[in-house]
Amino acid sequence: MGRHFGNLAKVRHIITYSLSPFEQRAFPNYFSKGIPNVWRRVTSSFFKVAPPMVLMYLTYSWGNSVHQQGKRKNPADYENDQ
Image (cartoon, rainbow, N blue to C red; front, top):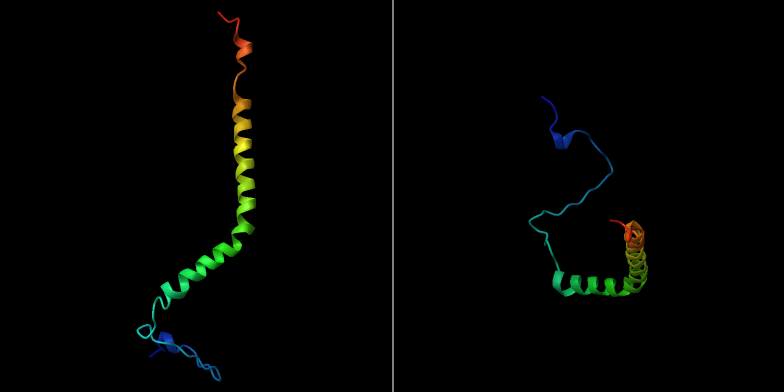
């Protein structure tokens, strides 16, 4: 009848290789190479990333405090109210 899904077209001169999922290891060298590699990458980029983030956090917290102070009412305006 019709072609099956995997055989919809003939492709010539292209070689593909694949490995069965049963022959692959899901996490090869995860603890021996993966975690030390992550640690190395984090420590190498820490001083590039941390100072701008600290500066932006300080600016954000300063802006919020100034905004909160600006929203407060001046108590001197209401001293003589009855």
